[in-house]
Image 1 (cartoon, rainbow, N blue to C red):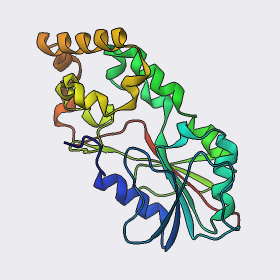
Image 2 (image 1 turned 90 degrees about the vertical axis):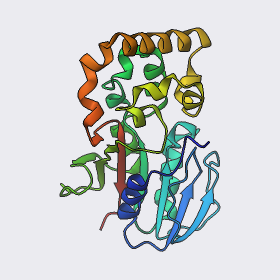
Image 3 (image 1 turned 30 degrees about the vertical axis):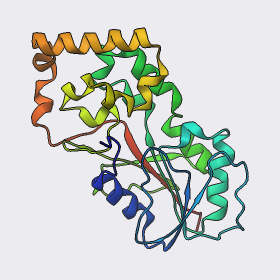
Length: 235
């Protein structure tokens, strides 16, 4: 069974951000590829320092969940700006919002380790060549600016199984296979992971989790750490 699959709502958000681009450079493939299937997509290695393509040779560029793997964030994103004549789209996690998850109460070391892997939204925007400007979750009106930041809600039925996907289904995280599919759990030692799982199991069995967070079980979506940045070239 695959625990990391393309979540349709995330794919739609990426497609919307790419606009009418027909040729797309996808920088690396993480656990799940969100490159559109109805366009001409070229995949490049995220560890390459220099992309072997001429300037503005693609309509747009994309990278999803790969920023922690870039050896040089500034150079990697600058290369995307160089080869794209249109938008550069980045789907990533906001480390500042990761700590707001209920999981931080039961697995603080796991959440902290995951947060350390991800550059801040402001840092990503800077590397893309501008300051981050906010926008409401998908569907809201843009505020403007060179780098838009758009929060992407996580749906109740999310099939891309990073930990926040189970915001309303905490029992799923008791399954070792589910945890193994999320790199965050591999960032801590085995003893820490076991202690975290035990804390969550005890909270579920005692009813503490539901007393504190049970309202999430009926929430259709969750505004968590997922964020999309869209950078465009200056006019």
